[in-house]
Image: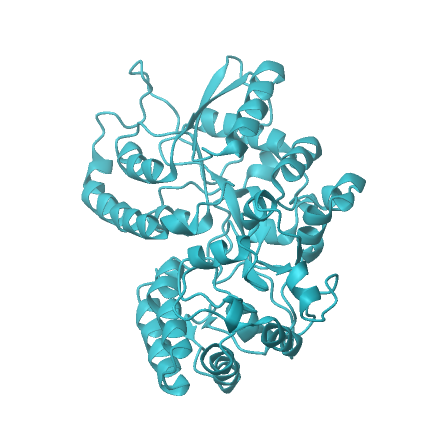
Amino acid sequence: MAIVSRKKTFNILVYMLLVSMLFALTACGNNNTANSGMDNSGTETKQPSKDTPAVDKAPDKKVTVSFWNGFTGPDGDLLKQIVDDYNKNNTDNVEVKMDIMPWDQLFQKLPPSIATKTGPNLVAMWPGAARPYIENKTFLPLDDFFTVTGADKAGFTESSLEFGQGRTGTQYMLPMQTNGIYLFWNKKLFKDAGLDPKKPPATLNELAEYAVKITDASKNQFGMALPVKGSPLHFIPFMKGNGGDIVDIANLKSVLNSPENIATLTWLQDLAKNKKISPAGATGADMDKLMMSGQLGMFITGPWLVGGLKANNIDFGVSVPPAGSKSQFIEVDGIGFSVPEGTTEEQKNAAYMFIKYWSSEEIVKKWSLANGFPPFLEKVLNDPEIQADPIVSAMSAMGNTGEPFLKGLITADRINNDVLWTMIEAIQAGQDVAEVVKKASDDIDEILKTEP
């Protein structure tokens, strides 16, 4: 799958730090005019305007777009086919030259390439990885995409555009693929526990009830995955669903320390510490293995789990996470296209033409059915073939109800990795919930002070 494995989380965090350091070291180099505004022949080139929309027409001569991404898995083969078809058949006078490399290599190469103006004109990555570039203004705003290309903005799901926006709503990424965080369940274990294998829990109370029924220590069998790192934040749907929240984004203030959150996390601690529905201290990778071995009843995670479950012949279902007492929260993430600084206006417009092609109903549908990710176009969501696929249709059921978590915050990864995971590990280990939450809330406030 295109979303990076959680086993690589540590490496990614290291490279995010590298990004910040490289930008700090090369900031003064951006004032060096020796290469600025020049193409390879030494001719001055026009940099894209942030205020004036480009003209929606094919360039007079062929424009080459350099495109970097990390789709090294089986999905990369389909991506190559789509790019080859575009290059062969497009009338935009555009050629996309794609360079696929491992994600960690991409994160090593991209900062210095931008600083020296030798980088790509188009890059794909997920929002968390893009935030340092947005903070340093080395990704260009893409708000003019719909004006330039004539693409129908209303045809995109709202959440697919939101995950690529900065805190003030500026569009820095356009969707390549989207995904939610879902509830997977083992149908055999449901049936063995006397539960209906076709019906996932609809509420958090049912989730807890089912997890207890499935858990059997004598078989090393657990009802629900409660990892302490290396996975999507499974506890956020519980907290937000019960009326809590983490950050007041408008005012850049933590709201973690609330009665609603303390009640939810106390409930979660009871499930982990007393009812032992999950192996203590396990990581997301541990839970993957347990789920694929048929010893785990439920797991809230991303669509990358599907391939492993199928390969291990696990009879499973997938749905949106259960609702809390107040609402239902479905986290949306994905991979988006961005245009780095140093790209000329001509190259940016050419990149737009390819993104428009990618965003056609035909390509969105092909990519979704092949890889199991929900489509980001409204019309494709309702396509009969999409609806006929049990996995894709279930993942698409979130519609426009999904939303990004900590939308637009540059510090989101720090909050997630340095505070929230530390908090949940302490709570599930049995530490005082109120004290842990208060400290975590104070830590978030300190981090938020660094938001631009």
